Image (cartoon, rainbow over the protein chains, first blue to last red):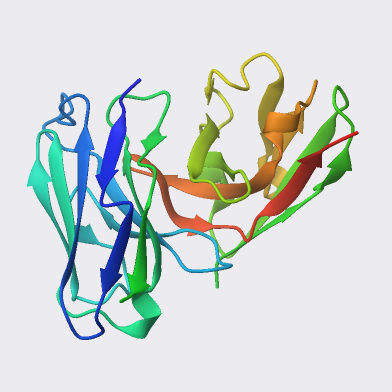
Length: 113
Length: 118
């Protein structure tokens, strides 16, 4: 199975400042069709997960443009240009290239510094 | 608007069975593959199973293979997860989610809590 490793596990942030979360996979996530199936999810306290980005960098409908994704191969990054209070929660990366199983990172908790 | 509503959760003894349902509305259910994803208390997300839109293909996590069965009723826009031989480590919130290219996608339910305890 592909192992997804996120860092840091906890990210203290200041509102209005940028934030960055790293996700690394144990194998390249480039699929035979040329696409890279790496998604990012946000889970606010007490809520269901919400997908933010798919295929590395494509934002889902309604996702603010302060969220961006980048990376290739085995190294990926989620960036928030200016953190807002509503962004607090846990973020997960997930690979959908080498399935089954689909595998998630262990999560990164975004909290106020 | 799109709604996925899970039901059927509860407290069950080890070794017993439980069936979860996920009722979909606001989407053309029969055109979507569907997943179950679970989250143990205080833990991260774990993919459980996926079923193709026509029910023709099903895949499972090794941790549930042989014990859980995913199925669907497209006439009634409902997804199911039959869970047999439950173990304490199956205790979790179970979410249903629509599929998209690359796995669980943009639509998720609110979750159903399953607690396996004697």
